[in-house]
Length: 497
Image (cartoon, rainbow, N blue to C red):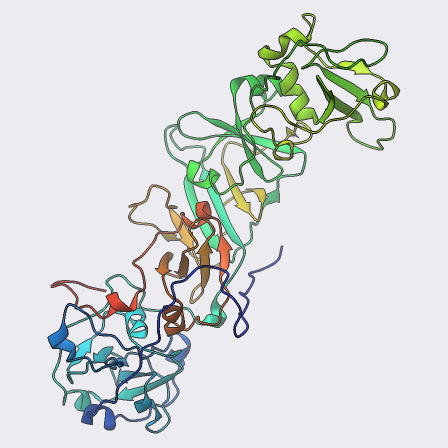
């Protein structure tokens, strides 16, 4: 099984794979401040590998004009973001686009246009208040910082305090799992986990075999060939699934498995009416014919055709089984609903037609052959979905030494119980349903990012985003939007980051 896949880097000028809202880049003003002029260079530190630099971003919170000072025409106020250790070269950082840190404490601050030093809740907020790509930092002593008045705290509550480096982002695989145990109460919802960069360490469900699963509420589904198929009672009997073991799964997990067409009755319009002649007998609309394929080298050598008024329609074994057991098609048979065996030579000259029945049947969404029973799974089983495949696992495949983070609050009923992201890793993804861009961090949360400038401020301006299905993304708890305008707002009294 392949390991984690790194994201691609977008070439200059390459179109974004997901939608973002374009905004103008702010223009920095000069800041005349003795606090900044006395900042010293900082030696390289190992901490630089565990945190990410912040950048400079212009912008005045509209609700606090007196705090940030008057806005000059065509320009915006400049913030000196104080947060992360990294060397600085001379006074180049005075031109903007640098991060400043208080020596000895690592405390984060923003220097407003009014000269006041404002504490910042977290690194993400600090970077959003900066412009550029955060590739330069500078440190300032507490003594020098003390020369400036202290302002109010600003930032986005619950934004991440650590950001994955662009090179640590992982594109794939994404694995989702549903876990149940033998001692769990019958009414208990199976636990759900979602893992980034971790392949499913189990047995792939073989092609042509399937398992029956049940969600809370009693609905049953067939899992086969990487898809889920809703099972009606009639289909269970028609496909002889009654002896298959049933595994309890969470509907949250089941939503991450691609959906196939519901398995149920298939009434044929005009069933019982005259069909084309297939020597030596006439046929009826809705009847199923079975032909032994003498050219087949292995497996079921039977071909199936549905009789229609204008010809014969090729169908698979699964659909043939559903057609002959649909009560609405009984008029096509003389009391014995079963495929009529004919010779290949008898159907060779009869016109073949494409599917066009009511309901727009999608034959490609059915298993061609009725899936056989999968190998025994036992009463305690973990089912995982990854890359269009279903795996039977002994446990959730967290890497050795790793730890999936429990989700402590469920504001969204779709959220998983556990999330695993590699330490210091993450992902940049876009929801295939909404087109929204999200940053996933090792806190086990995703954060919406609305604009391309915000992406650049966070250090991801040249990283290509990975398209991710809405059902899979919904398993990861959503944090606050990472927005520069919100980052510059004062924190409500008692707020924390």
